[in-house]
Image (tube, rainbow, N blue to C red; front, side, top):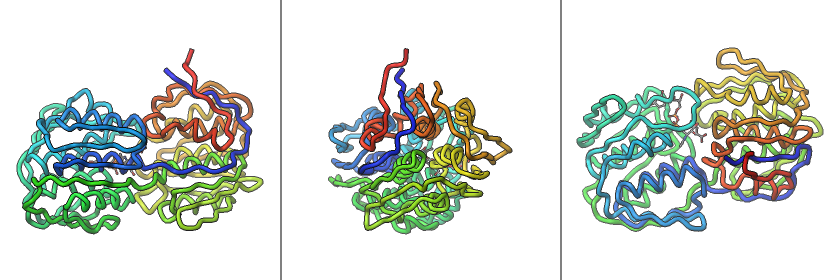
Length: 421
Ligand code: EPZ
């Protein structure tokens, strides 16, 4: 098992280019199954979750090649509609294959998906939506079998679930009738999935709003070769920017548009950060002393992203004043709290709220990651702490950040990857 060894206290400075978004690459790769063809997906992050998705595509009969952030998936010969249980348990995004297999083959068999332990994470909204669209869904223990065809019409999501929105967008492409999905999530990654689906020749519109319309076509079976570039990763950007603020630094980030992360930049500015942006470049500078942002509530886009909550919590330990962060999306996303307390943080959890007493100087020590974003938040804590920090179980971080240590070293951070003793 590898770990990160970090020497804290060095202000980060310099330039870094933001990579492609994990949370777009995964649904886009799943959607490649819905349309036969050779799909060339560029700016695909080299992370474990993408490797797992690649394995799933191969298990279904696709040929793939992944080199220099370009993943080529040849999905002309899909010969299975069952996602192996062993792979399903490793990543929640495997659930996207329901929609794309139903679109392509009219059936799909999956088991309950795995993924970060950040709450119960059921898939009832996905299943309810598929049933509203006219599919038969049979649940036998952990196995979920879906079959049939989408009859079009109107589907209402009980909550703007990102994954359910994406799954139903894909499933609806097999109907020649029009399907309108209401109460959709509006995340930029959904807009990106829509862009890829249009490249495949699917008629999808409304991505980024809470109403998405899909009109199926007769020629779904005709192979289409595509080339697509994944949208930049706003969560990676928010994570690196938090590292700069937490160490009192200043840095320029390329390949990131401020419009994708307004809520995050607004909170960072409330804390005293100076932000300048032009086109797809953002410069961020830390104030002499960070201030508490007051109350922050995580919410679906365009609200403050839940995937940036653990990083913000770490940042608030060093800001002056008391901060309340309300986790409004997941029911267990303060997993890294106890590790931060080991470093000297003063954090109380009351239900969905974390109350952080600021002005706490963190001390380096040995800590462990328990999930992807919580693990990244612990790396940020190590960078701003006095002394040395070791973060264990960094395989959680490898799922969603490509070479995080290399990127932070590029900004002057003292961090190296080691094998845990
Ligand atoms: C996506 O997960 C992201 N993952 C998550 O990022 C992100 O945190 C989340 O959206 C919210 O933005 C990918 O895109 C691969 P949801 P998803 O369905 O689709 C509940 C990261 O760190 N819910 O919007 O699983 C659910 O339990 C990951 O990159 C149901 O109750 O999120 C949660 O409380 C973590 N029933 C809330 O809705 C359902 O059928 C939001 O979930 C589906 C969801």
